[in-house]
Image 1 (spheres, rainbow, N blue to C red):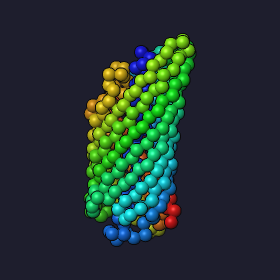
Image 2: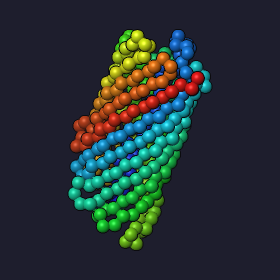
Image 3: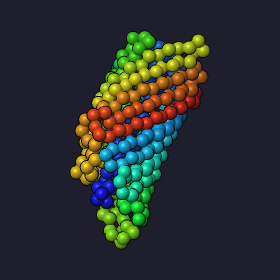
Length: 292
């Protein structure tokens, strides 16, 4: 595999995995106006995701941990900030090519209640990564990258107790620049930049059940159609970055648990790549806690 295409393909794979529209308990926003007084003004939360993927050429693993905090600054406006740490490994099915790396990103996010049924989410982040690459298995080099992303979503919420339907559409864009370096063969590897965007749209269906203790259980299922666009010309045939270009489908299941004392747990799983030759799958856990 061409080294430039290997690096570019892996950078796009990671770009696809690290972008995130921040999950927010939208019931907190505008709660006083809708009779939900007592909703926490400040929360801290942590989320971890472990994912795997395979395509025509390689298998990979990916993990990311998010740590965030947010506050209601007005009844209909929530502002927050988060930092994320991510790592990945990518191994070719044939040959001995391997790539691995670790990175971080940090930045603000916000959610706005537009009216009784619609919410808008935005996020921006900047960061760096450190990566190791072994194109043939006989030697290993390291290179650094800088990256930034922006993302946003518009979500509706329609309830008919105990059911809630949440149609959503989101847009994300990430850009990552690999810094120039000299490899172990004394070859100058020039700087290159890859970028990737994605549009997603689909509904989430949830069912809320309140226990005698006051704890609320909310199982859910979702389906999204996704369209990915970016530097297709830099990726190699059969790679994950190439396979997920264009349209594909994604399904997810989840379970949210909210206690009366302000602690919330969210479990989720997903399968991505429907309609392509690639398969992407993962599990995540989020824990949040009210500070007031």
